[in-house]
Figure 1 (cartoon, rainbow, N blue to C red):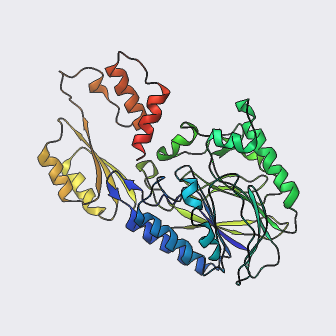
Figure 2 (figure 1 turned 30 degrees about the vertical axis):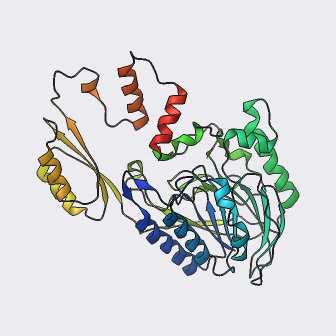
Figure 3 (figure 1 turned 60 degrees about the horizontal axis):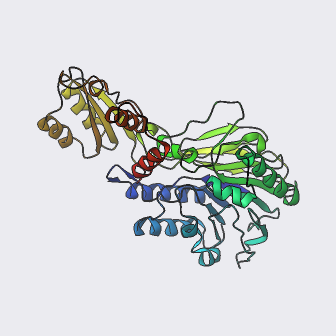
Length: 405
């Protein structure tokens, strides 16, 4: 059985004020072509389907059209779960119609799919909260999926029945996964875990987390989960949330973030994006291959101390979206900014790095480190205006929420 794993589409997302929807349409078309070319049997989309709880009509239309196309009229099942950017209720709203196309949409960790059967041979044969078993057309062995859409800590505790010690959360989640695996996942089927969360090796280095996704552990987020908590019956873990392709473990099985289909922040500049293709058979280790995605604009950063060199670089990178830093003795004039913008239509940010700053500025203002993360810059600004007082967690959460809009 061949399974395509993708995640973090973030449909409707903008880079500052620059819409990415035309690029998203191109790259989703590319993913559909890959699914056909590779003769994929199943498609998994592991969360963050949209970029906001209230996506635009254009983003919604693109989502539905893509799922209908990639499902091949119900002959290729599609399983899509909610991520931390998604409204669980919105994701599940079209469920009755979606199932007629072989598309299963799961918004909550306790979502349960009602068994159904299509004329194509696709059938959900078993299900309970957080689990479903499918008969895939053309295959005798069933596909079993333990599914955990994103849930903030409160919702996850409620689902798991945890009312006290925070430290028990990941252990209780492990117990739930193990219970489902022991009940349903024997070597006669293909067994996988699909989730949208932050997972890492216990005691190991944390996976690289992109700046647009750092909020999952801070704004009502659930604590990180360890790879050792994956049930031994699992043959593959399909994860969403981190935008860089990462296989964070080989034991008990590959644990993979497939990456987002486009670079969505300049922290992802120069990254290659992928989909993962899994070849699986009952009772055997899976084979994982990644296929690079070519569509969409690259995000590039440039740093120059001469305007002529900056203009030349802009001319050479017309098909990219760029962030450009100009090292200068003075603040950039309107004429200089205009010159840069005239030579490139995709400049997202022009950052002046002024070597000889106005001596009338305070020491704090003249020593701004523009390489810092925007959260740290806001924290420094707040302290400069409030007698070195740190902003509280509530204010930082509000700032992150505004920043993610």
